[in-house]
Image 1 (cartoon, rainbow, N blue to C red):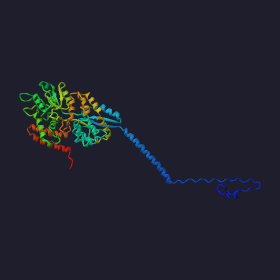
Image 2: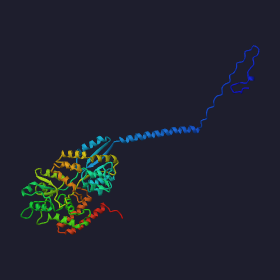
Image 3: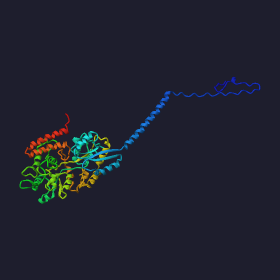
Image 4: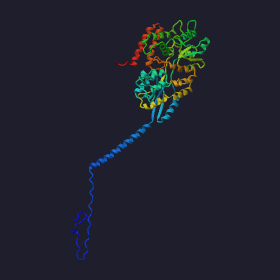
Length: 471
């Protein structure tokens, strides 16, 4: 017997045929419907959560990408505080940078030197300071809290050492970090009146013995002993332009450590004695009654004058017909040293756009940028700012008025006894002590006493601006 299945009815269930009647319609069995799988609430919840997670992650990814793209193209305006140069000098250099970085605008603002350092520090502390600013090479102790050390991808220390004069390396590299980039260099040089030298038959002095001899030989006094023509404008403090720089030069050549005068006070006192001797009767070649040394030289009333490159423009403006030349300073045997005074471009540590500011500083540090600036500056005056880069300095060899300033940079040194920084702080306080030393010696205070007082004052200022680490 065959096994029954749900689709096969049994024989007894099939109706039998009766008398002539039509058999009843056979009813076909309906196939059983498949049962639907059971979907739990947890499964539905998990599915919904999965979709939500995918949507949220997708939204965050899209938002992140758009945020990055937006930041890359975000417009940034940098404020650049400069000194001395007008906006049109930097226009071309800034435009070159902006072409390479279309989302960055550089706003150059020429600052007044009066109260500049104080204004820079106060504005920085208030959060309204510049992104990039110019500062003097002696100001790093005062500005150490606001100058940003440069990352290696901007200018490396080794790159800087290869391309810039040694004096800038000593000044700007601190504890292995680079704190800015100079666009120019300047050194104290000797200006000589060519007509006075020619009429007296003198050649430019290269040592101090010759300098002293020529200074006395060129000096003309009237019957009362009043100086009519000075052989050399030096010896006093208040009416000698760059007196702190000149005295620094003498001290450095004589082996003085200007940061620690007490280390070798004899060298410092000898330098001071030599300096004031030019204003000490009866053989003085200068005195305190005369006009400012720069003015006297420009008028043809001084045979020799010590100055920087910018003095050339002032002299030419005061007396276009004056015949003068610029030479290296006299020196002691084997000590061809002069003083350097220059300005540095740095990035503000409180800038809200440090990345962009550093990019602009990197642009300023390029050789072609320095050369473009020099060319632009030379269109408005006799010459541009002397190059701070060694690889550009030699191109100035054919210009006798500017080349001595860069030639001496190879052996120049810095000193915080520096005039014309207008800082009302570090330099000014140092110069007060130095000026007091010179005046006291002209009033017959001994060189030893004046030097001791000077050394004490220097230590006080250094302790204020460069506090010694606690033991």
